[in-house]
Image (cartoon, rainbow, N blue to C red; front, side, top):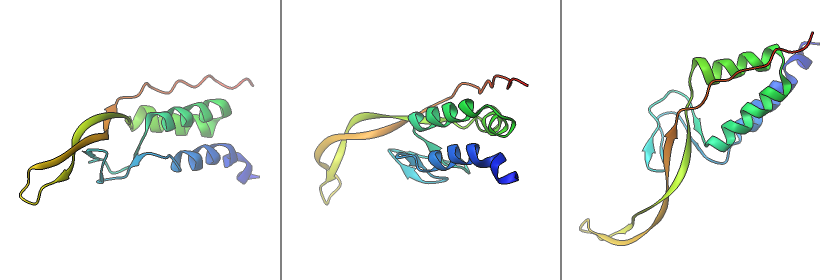
Length: 118
């Protein structure tokens, strides 16, 4: 019986864990280092995660949403193309510039669950 209690929220979490763009704890990616002890995901993935939890709207999903978005205040990031050096000369000068995706961190809105109808 308890397995059913977590099935919906677990599916939201599994999908969120498969986000196409992430910066794991202490990793350098997309031009920035994530100094946090948890993974930071692209804002599209976090928005999908929020919608998934709100659609379930039960005690477990709301605890997860409040913890993730309100208590931990996990930011997300968007990718913006920037002209950067993509190939260096052996002595250190830039040989070729190109457009590369760079992350810009975004502070997210709080999670506001609507109370389930009794």
